[in-house]
Image 1 (spheres, rainbow, N blue to C red):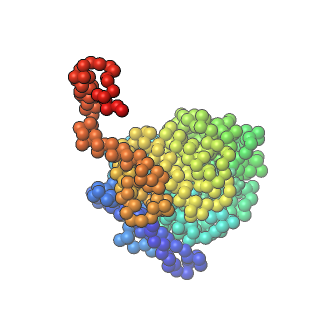
Image 2: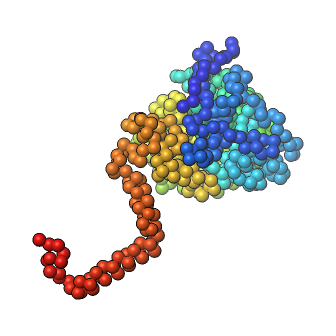
Length: 562
Ligand SMILES: C[C@H]1O[C@@H](n2cnc3c(N)ncnc32)[C@H](O)[C@@H]1O
Ligand SMILES: Cc1ncc(COP(=O)(O)O)c(N)n1
Ligand code: SF4
Ligand SMILES: [Zn+2]
């Protein structure tokens, strides 16, 4: 379950200092792979049969009981002690180093984490088919990679809004999201104390952090898009860059001439950043300052090695609007911007929709790859239908699984609160687990080398009625155990050969195991065994028949009739 401890804070801390979840996930311990001088964390799941399974671990030191956690100090700046290669043509980015044939410490860490060759990591980054979001000023983060040749990743959005706001709640959402497997988090705060909230998150986040700087810029002008300026935006980007933000959503593809293309849509522009930029462009009747100053933005990103997440400001917000002209016009512009960013040595990924029916999903990946040099695709869902508010983690996980199988590298989660309100801690967990299901299902379908190990281990535990192992191998051990124990809480039930679904007499897995045991006892394991037994049985029968005089009808007394 983990323990929630009160986090002590100094005077700069928020008055409502809250709680963090600490301690290992049920049945697991932290385990470190030693790769030369690097310590690569893994989660070791211990099984009752003496075996164990090591899985990818995003949770940081919070799940390591031997780590000292002090939220005021923040996590150890581990990456500061790693080797940083010299700049290549003025660029100190993973992309520049990868192109120069240099395997960075970050790449070696990632290779061990993913169980792949470091050369694969380097070459995928070099051609821009993968990114490593790692701002030099976020040394607390454990490097990770986003690219279609690697495990599909999950992002969890957190952050306050004007309606609900507490710094400690947001820090706990970050710890909580990464505990359940979020590979990155985005701080999408739009309410009070945006800078301070982000500082607490940055200093304590073991995963890369993304933001949408236009949100804070809009806050600075009191929510009036027309008052935004390039200078104010630029300064906000630098402010966030200095804090260590690893990737930033930039809606630079929303051009003035694309805005009318959304006029006939059912849901217009649903992207916040997209709607803000559309409002600015129309108010001034000028081209977007993000588009016009894009080169300057690239220079800033390059200094810190911030990764672009080129925003889909015109993504469809309803099934009816999917794959329309506005969406693909913007995507073409994002393709041009990709080329520009990469020419500056800056890493790029591309954001994708949104709301898309299943038959229109694959086209999104195909067009993105074609227009954007195969830059990693990072999609919000997509929701496969609009009819289930309160269940949009599910409507979107359906789309997410499909789009990930088609090649999306990172999935942005959607929680049950989508379209309804700000997600809380419980929604964050449901969103992350739901998206781990989508991502892992895609890994299986794509034949990711180690994905199936966990399915096989869990299925084996299930068939052998090792209930504790089945729980502990689950994405959410706590809920799996709680559901089982609702009806059969007693300790002996943890080895019982049934659960309350079928009960002891109708448990098909128990009956099937009995069938197997019988077959082994009687030498009836293979098809040949069965064929032989049938043949022997037939021979015995016909011998009996011959002995009885080859008569089809026997007198009643010989068959024991009355
Ligand atoms: C682009 C997506 O970002 C999500 N989103 C926007 N703001 C927040 C927040 N503060 N917390 C969590 N999710 C958020 C919404 O789910 C939206 O669909
Ligand atoms: C995959 C994805 N797409 C978009 C956004 C930004 O939100 P918005 O475009 O609404 O400002 C996001 N955070 N993640
Ligand atoms: S989620 Fe709520 S606030 Fe955001 S665009 Fe939809 S209705 Fe508006
Ligand atoms: Zn929506």
